[in-house]
Amino acid sequence: MKGLFYDFFVWSAGSDREILDRTGRSEHVKHAGYGGLVLVPAVLGLFSMMYAVSTLTDKPFVYIGAGIVWACIVFTFDRFIVSTFRKSDSARKDLFSFLFLSRLLFSIGIGVLVSHP
Image 1 (cartoon, rainbow, N blue to C red):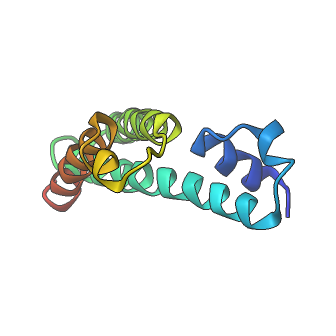
Image 2 (image 1 turned 180 degrees about the horizontal axis):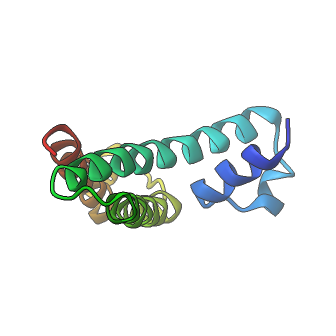
């Protein structure tokens, strides 16, 4: 189960490998899944930015570079939000926390940018 992709996904989720190694298999799968969910908006952002910039210029290095930069920004921001989110005692506190609301606004913004290049 543990390989290069697994390590990357767990790192993307911001999970602590030392703690994760002391847990069951279901926790490993869950945290690797969180990392995959961090990667999806970055990949979508990569292609949407490449397409958007390609409508402005015919130079591949410009639109590929812009796509990579945008994907890195999306990935870094989303990874930070996921890795710093901590569950509180009540769902109400979680729903109105700064991190949850910032991730929600970020997701809405990414959705608009991806759907309307």
